[in-house]
Amino acid sequence: MGCRSDQNYIPLDSQTEYQFAKDCETSEEVEFYFKLPEKFKIPTPLDHYNPDWAVVFKGENKIYFVAETKNTGEGIQRGVAEEKLCESEQMKIAYALKNFDCLRSEYSDLDYCVIEKVSELSEKL
Image 1 (cartoon, rainbow, N blue to C red):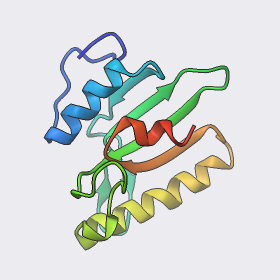
Image 2 (tube, one colour; image 1 turned 180 degrees about the vertical axis):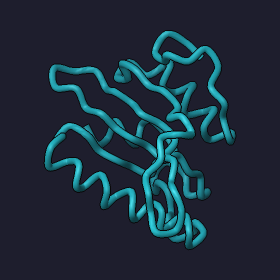
Image 3 (cartoon, helix red, strand yellow; image 1 turned 30 degrees about the vertical axis):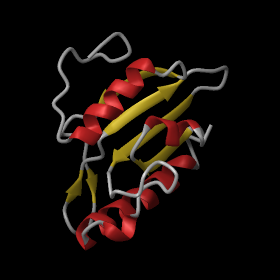
Image 4 (tube, rainbow, N blue to C red; image 1 turned 45 degrees about the horizontal axis):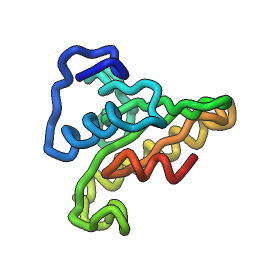
């Protein structure tokens, strides 16, 4: 994609992911981002779950996000309507949230979010 990612080619699953990568490239707040490899898996009782992105924001105290990009047609003002996702996707996301809650006890600058756009991450800074 560009200079803010370590990947020359990013395999994208959707238009939402394409727009997210493009926004990471143009956002002045994003220092670095990359699409998480398929081997990055969070074990859940259902199956292994692979979040979409890792994003590092600029600043004196860097903030690190692991992000799952979804588009449920709600628009940026309303964010992702998780209730519109299939039940297995909702459960995998719930397990990922618990996983990152546990990690935050050691890594307070790490967060996990289900979002559609980079600007939703910026709001959490």
